[in-house]
Image (cartoon, rainbow, N blue to C red; front, side, top):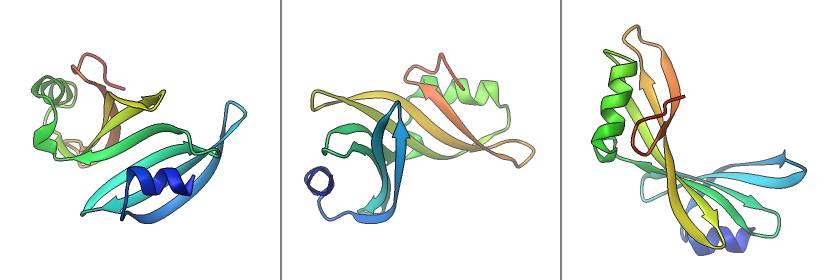
Amino acid sequence: MAAALRARFPGATIVQVTKELESGVVVYDIEMTKDGKKHEMDCKEDGTLVDIQNEIAVKDLPAAATRAIQAKHPGCTIKEAGEILVVMDGKETRDHFEVIIETADKKEVELTVSLDGTQIE
């Protein structure tokens, strides 16, 4: 697991590691920072990467996703954004976004948004 972390995020500073059981498999959720940005990586005990979350600038969200968020939550402010990459056979593929918004009534909410903004949870 440590080798996978060093290979994918050399020089990262680990903030927190959480051991979880997902579908009977031990997965480590590793939160870290690198170059001033937040990153998160889920990794199996054998070092196999499951998924990666990279902080991105709010302005880098696709326009369709931003419009859909604002339509569903009028008057909100998007505070943070992250791209989620699913790892299959060593290949990273952008799958969806996770965003934190502040609603018009000042509540903080985390949302999962599809790449094209058609699905928001």
